[in-house]
Image 1 (cartoon, helix red, strand yellow):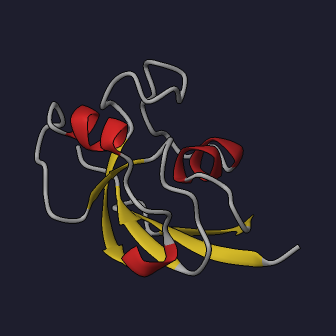
Image 2: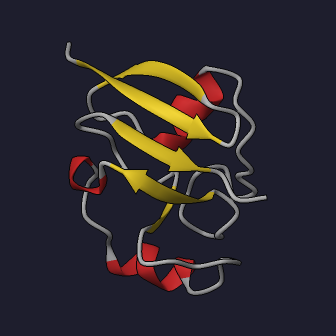
Length: 97
């Protein structure tokens, strides 16, 4: 299976994950703290991340994700929910404070 590099900021930790892994699963598998109050079911916005590089290597936002993102603090054009964004290439993401 193809592996992709994911860099988590501000910790500056880079990990490798399988194609199709969600950002949340990538973080949890590698013991990187990323809140996820709903357990990754797209029912809250606590796993909000900001994509710094590689937006083109993530699955498209669904309407459900866009609705949940409206409740995220510090929303940007490149905001995503870690539970919904699946990886298909190298990315750099910021976990907001």
